[in-house]
Length: 178
Image (cartoon, rainbow, N blue to C red):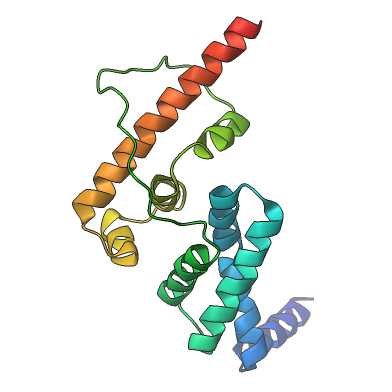
């Protein structure tokens, strides 16, 4: 019995050490980045169909640039695709919510947060998604968007404040309706 386990382990190890074909490597790259690209695309568009189109376009761009694209190439392709689909546009900045605003510390539902995210301007939505949802550092987001890290941090703060205000407004509407 013990020797059988060793033989099975040796077969698995040999299979894992065998060189992968390019198609298998590309499939692994796609699988490892698919969820992140789709999530950002979905939250930027609010549509599964558009998010799927952006996902496909992103990976086509990335694989055309490099046979085995890394994280940075895929991120660049995603931003290019968002711009081409006119999802990420330059917008006139909206006035920031009042600085003294403090929301109530109630738990919110994920669906409420998803709905509130849709109200953010696209540049703030993208910075919020990259930093607070995907966990990118401000310096990485700044490199991706060709802006200063201080602008990224300011945009993230403004996005968070807008989200709080929108969630509070949604709660007020819910309370008034009840």
